[in-house]
Image 1 (cartoon, rainbow, N blue to C red):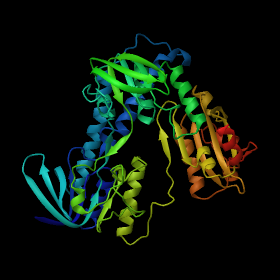
Image 2 (cartoon, rainbow, N blue to C red; image 1 turned 90 degrees about the horizontal axis):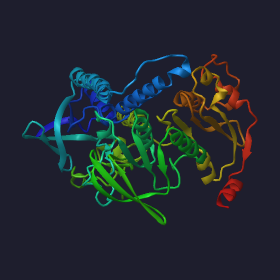
Image 3 (cartoon, one colour; image 1 turned 135 degrees about the horizontal axis):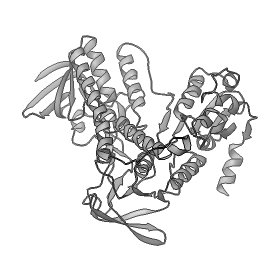
Length: 472
C-alpha cells in the first residue's frame, strides 16, 4: 500500500488542474489516468472537433472564392491532411500536459484504477503489474463517453462515434448521422462541406430540442440549404452491414418505414458516465438512476472525503464547467466558501454559423411563468457581418418585465460566442441592458450590433398567454 495526501482518478479538465494545484501546494499527489492525459477535450472531443470543423470551413470558403473576388485553380480535399493537422495540435497539447506533471511534481500513473476498499484504489498498470494507493482525500474525474443505444444490429455494425469520425483519413461516401444534437449537427455539417452525402436522423420533432424553437428552425434551414437530408420524427429501428463498408438503416416515421443505405454511421445520441467497473459501491458512493455520481453543490459525494467533478456528476457536459468544478472544490479546500449553485452556464455549438446562449431562454421563462421583455433582430444589425459576407442568423435578449436586468441572450450567427460573452459579462456585473445599449463599442465589430439590438423597443411577453398559444 502506498499512501498519499491527494489521489485523483481521471485527469480530465477538473482532475489535471486539481492534481497540479495540490502538488504545487506541497501535497503528495497521485494522479491516475488510463489513456488520455488531459481528458477527452484536448484529445478526442472539443479541440479536435473544432479543428476539423474549421478545416471544413476553410474548404467551404475556398469553394466560395469567386464571391470574394478571388480566382483559384483546381481545389481538392486531402482528408489525411485534415487528420494530420488535427493530430499535430493534439501532440502539442499532450506534450504540454506531460510537462505540467513534471514541473508540478504530481505523479502521473497510467493504468486502470478501481476502488477495492472505502479509500483504497488499485491500479492495473498499462505497462503490466499493479499498484495500490490510499488517501484521505480522493477526487473522481471519470468523464463520460458516447452513448450506444440498443438498436438491433447497431453494435455489430461497429458505428463511428465522434472519436472515430475525427480520426477518418478518408471521406465517407454517404454518412448517416443518428442524432440532431450538438455532435450530430457539427460533424454532419463538416462532412457535408467536405463532400460527403449526409443523412441526419432525429427521432424528435425538431433539432436541438433544448433550444428555443426559432433556433431549431434556423439550424434546420441552414443544414437543408447546405444539402443535408434531415429527417425529423424518424426513429432508427434496425441496422445491417458494417460502418465503413456498407450499412442499411431501417427507419420508422409513423406510419412509414424506409430503408436508408449508406457507407458509414455516426452515433451522436448523448453521453453516459464512466462510472461502471470502478468499484464505487465499495467506496459507498451513491449514483443516480442514470449512473451519475450524486454530489452536492460543493461537489461532495455521499462518501466523506471523496469528491466528484466534471461529466461523471451529470450535466452540463462542458469543459468550462468542469474547470469551474475544479475551482469550486479547490477553493473550498483552501477555506473559501464556493458553490455550483446559481453559476452561469454559457455554451456554444460550433456549427457554421455558431449558436451561443447564456442565461434564461424563452422556453425556460415560459415554463417558470415569468413575464419578460424581448428584443430580437437579424445578425446583420452588426455591420461587421456584411464585411465578411456572413449575414445569416439573428440575436435576441430577454429582459425582466419589471426591471432592466438581462435574463438571457441567444445568438445564431457570425462570432455568436464572442457576442454572448459580452452580454454574459454585463449579466455577471448585474448591469441593466441600457448599459450595453448606451455603450461605445468599436466600429465595425460584432459587439457594436448589441447597441442596435438593445435600442429597439422591447416587446412584452406574457408567459401565460404564450403557453396558451403554444398549447393551442
